[in-house]
Length: 87
Image (cartoon, rainbow, N blue to C red; front, side, top):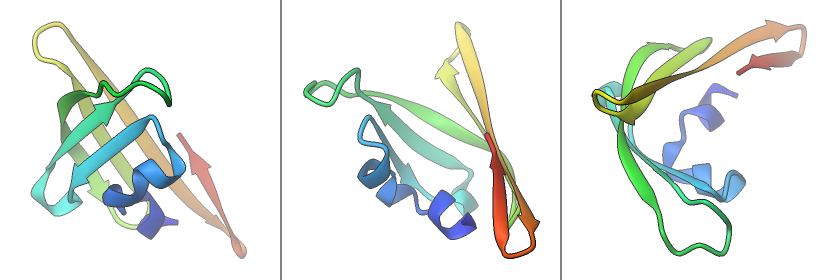
């Protein structure tokens, strides 16, 4: 699950309204979002990786500087042969 979560270049294949580029190690990503599947317009902002604790936790922050910021986290927990994802 961690590999899918951190394969940013593939996000758009399973989340067609969102695109990410960059890698966890750099600490910075480009986050792009569009309002609908038919919209050609993408809105892009920088994402700052706040925490990357492979293979269990990823936390990032994005927004418009000095106006708003959104923290988004992913917590992975192994339970037997399954993984529980808390977002």
